[in-house]
Image (cartoon, rainbow, N blue to C red; front, side, top):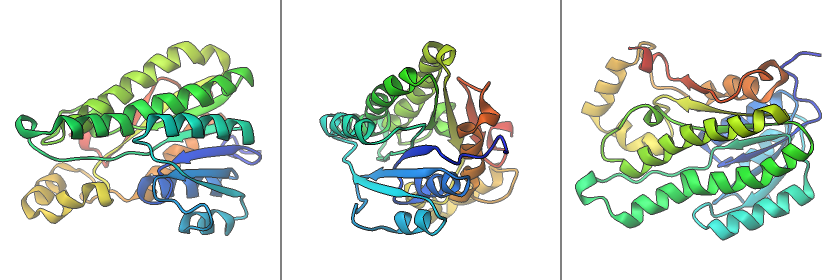
Amino acid sequence: MSAFDLTGRTALVTGASRGIGFAIAVALAEAGADIVGASASLDPAGSAIQDAVTSRGRRFVGHRVDFSDGDAVARFGDEVVTEESIDILANNAGTIERAPAADHPVSSFAHVVQVNLTSQFVLSQIVGRRMLAQKGGRIIFTASLLSFQGGINVPGYTAAKSGVAGLVRALSNEWAAHGVTVNAIAPGYIATDNTQALQDDPERSRAILERIPAGRWGRAEDLGGAAVFLASDAAAYVTGTILPVDGGWLGR
């Protein structure tokens, strides 16, 4: 059996209805994992991600969860660990709000931090307890280039994604000895809804492309291989790491 084979494992992927979360769920399913998908817009009765997973011969269960509501996230976490044995948690649900720091509404800052950081900690804590009890598991966060850099007009997003990087290290320090690895993927500039405003701005888009050695915007599918690696036995000794998938941006 390949060290990258995920057959027999169940992955919980948040933000699975579109973009990076969709691509990660598909990649994990292609590697053999069954998928529990959750997002604020996912229809549990039927969705594109359900079709994509089941067409690859894997089981799919969908949940609609508002990640801006901490109590709802906690209830969902308690429910899912009761119903499923989660081997892999891909913490990908996220949002972004843009405004200059001097005018950035505190409510926007708090909303972004809640979705991108606090709710991910809550879910990791609940699922992590079960992983510790079963003496094994993989937790993968979606970090960002703004886990390393400051960005422009996105103070809440930068604070949250910097917090994700710290949380990865903190959880890894406590859980690695118990067989639970905690890592993150840091996507570069990926062509998704979250970056649409940048793609639509000719000056910003040109400046971004000039900085990327690969010479193109990333695609959500570019994250799939990294997710499978970090979820697999091939990465059993990899923990506390932020893995950039950025077309060379950080090396520039």
